[in-house]
Amino acid sequence: MNTDIIKGNWKQLAGKVREQWGKLTDHDLDVIQGRREILAGKIQERYGYTRDEVDKHIRSWEKTLKN
Image (cartoon, rainbow, N blue to C red):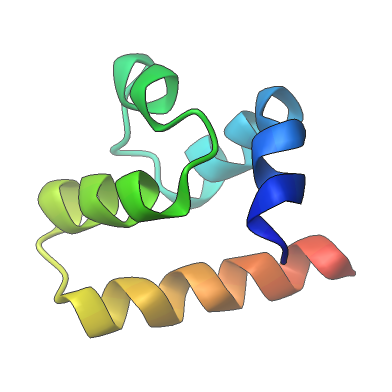
């Protein structure tokens, strides 16, 4: 998914992010503001995933948004 689309629709997507990664706080979502790199860092921080794991999870999540 195009990062511009994520940024532009962040208010709507934030709920879906929260469903997928429940350990992210409202403050985290405010900081992320649709920026994929920050989302990846916050997921890595909260879940202890490696960067490669995070990238796989985000790509998989992005595919669900297209459907």
